[in-house]
Image (tube, rainbow, N blue to C red):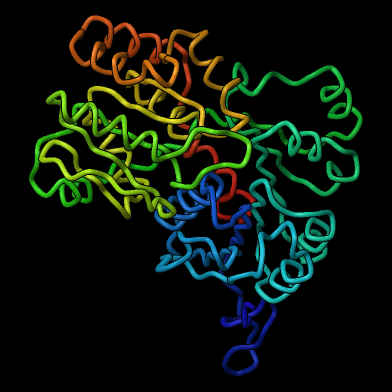
Length: 368
């Protein structure tokens, strides 16, 4: 558990002069042995916040069995389970760390929100699924939240319903923000190091964190098989293996497997590629914001509808699993079809949400 290291607000310095605690942000993403979308979003936000204001102290609460927790570059507390299931530990961390803002990403219960309020912290909740969105629109939560960020653009997540608009008029809070996608600043140097001087990828494959979800038969290993087939056809393929990916991949001079890819490096790799093969998570929206042609296959139960919304905009192709290799190969051989997808992605009007997210946290911390 967080040990409270660092000056507390109102503590005394030399000569009895009160010292002012540095601005502090606590990140509480849902986490566990599988899946990492919420953690990756929180990591990118914390990185951007520190880049803008280095004096900000950050801290994370993460499941101890989450593979991405190993070697993490922000201070963190490891919990026996996801933060939603460990409210007592979350409350204790809030009381000890005394943050100015707490970002709950699909995680947390009422007791944790009340603790944030009691500590004088601003509370931000990010919802990525309909169930979490419903929770955040309960009146007792709306009283406790300063911000509710709905992950994904309004055309994909769905606009505010009549009931949600009524509750907002009634309560006057929280501030609602739809997040198109959070784009980490591209890290070209990191991408170059990962590629080790090799050719830029024709297709980059990003199946997510690397684990299989209980509500889908699709697996990251299937994405690996598609990568092997595309490499066998002579295409330069980069496969981004998430921290939970353990499946074997047949070695090939045209198929490179990259591990430990940070957010900035991933954005740089996406920008270098001609085609992106991806699941229906955050990376799909990031690639669309970057104007990249995408082929998308759902790997979790909530992703099919999201992919369908993107295909309805013309911003992605969604073949059946047995047709993925043929679809990717055809697009790689047809620049006009790729450009049509890319043009539709650009015309969707989605933008980078990260600057606004950082600015809002800065406002909560009194930095803007």
